[in-house]
Amino acid sequence: MLRSIIVAVALISAVAAQAQLRIRLGGNAVNYQLLLQDSAGKELKITPDQKKKIEGELENYRQTMQSEIQSVFSGGVSQEDAQKAVDEILSKLQPDLKKRIAKVLSEDQMKRFSQIELQSAGVKALQRDEIVKTLDITKDQAAKIAKLSQEMDDIQEKAMENAERETVPGGGVRFVLGAAEEKKLAEARKKNLQQALAVLTEDQQKKWAELTGPEFK
Image 1 (tube, rainbow, N blue to C red):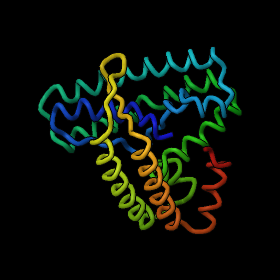
Image 2: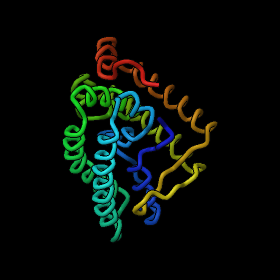
Image 3: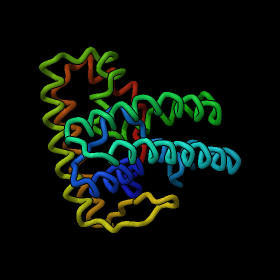
């Protein structure tokens, strides 16, 4: 699942780099790009027609996001304001994308996608507003999870420095890791998530297990 590191991350990173800013993707951003990966497509039994429609929805989303993000960085902007603006853009665009994807997938497909996407998101998923509310995560727990999330961000950003960059149609960039680097990062993500889950109570962990469903490999 790490082969395609969220296109949104790549796009934001590429644009931010030009402005010499360091922008991170918030936990509320769902990685719908997973739907185009062969492994997820097989798991969800996505048809060729569905895949074509999903590609169209994701391309429209990418173009809109790219336009809005570029407008943020077009003028002089501080690190703090840029991060806030990107968070607001994603918060505005993601709900609409979810509705569009839900019209393409069946109810069962959408449910299973939500499970495997949470698994893929790792510690970031535990910072999503809906997950925080569902699990009733306390402020103390949230602070510990945020620290672990930042540590994972640092590890992933370092990995991306050594990744190959592939141009995505429309001007975006995708970061692709080698097999060894991908395995190393996957192990780091797994360990990081285990540390985050250890912060939760037994009841919270059970709820998390229900939300993520059977392990997706």
